[in-house]
Length: 412
Image (cartoon, rainbow, N blue to C red; front, side, top):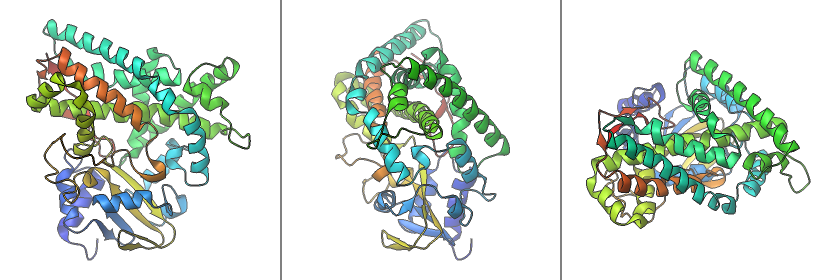
């Protein structure tokens, strides 16, 4: 990387190759020392400051996907495989679409994924969380060690998204396997095996949803699959099959992967801060501010990217044609210019929403549902399991884009 300070090159290199994934925050700090939006290589920029990252995400002239640009820019890895894998696995979903396709898909999705529908899930979320917490309390009473991720972190959001989509909860373990394989393509560095497993998982999910869509069109239900399958735009058009399948797969995977990380990351904080556990136990209304600080402090989604087709000025920097911006959401959420003492977990911070769910036109459609699940779960956990403690050192997932725990072994 010519004409770039050695520490900057090392920090970015660590993020792109996996060397810094278990703890990316020192790398973010090293990058930030060079500016909010910095050019690391010819046509390859990194946004780490909050204002710059927010501006990049809100800039409508920047693209979330472009095959031509990917072939001409630095991309995520040296072999250029990440972009192609994402294109094959994520497919024609909102995550990979630019206007006008994104606008059309988002409009249809918003008409089905309504605030009223989400609010109607509150009772389901509460019931499922209560059932799972009581099961953990039963294990704790027997003196058993249990893994929070497997016994609560995954089951709660999977059950909730299954109920929302109208798919059987009995398939939740299978969904977890497919999602683990599929979401590997969102990471900066991939192996050939990762790509093969992700493509196979996408094929299996396509078959599953193709069958379910056919059944829902024949016998509609009060669920999101039915709503998506029957949705019509203003001109009477519906989602083509490839877009319908891609968006259902996206909703399923995004519906629990990020929430699982949010739950694990938040519980890890509580385990090290008995004062916060007691505060939540005494006053459950503190849950929203606690959840917002978890999202800021250890974001479940750390990285996204944008592509520049024509010259675009953003945050005082002229992005040249055929350039790429790697947006470090986790770094932006620890920007000291926006959050004093950013490395300190402080749920009493003034209301300054983090960038964990993105910003602009691609703001996460399921953000409200993820927040709801976490706000319900944490007060239940600290109330029903007041002696919760680590039974062994936790194990981080060796990922960057989706940051969370693989295992949180507990006793209660």
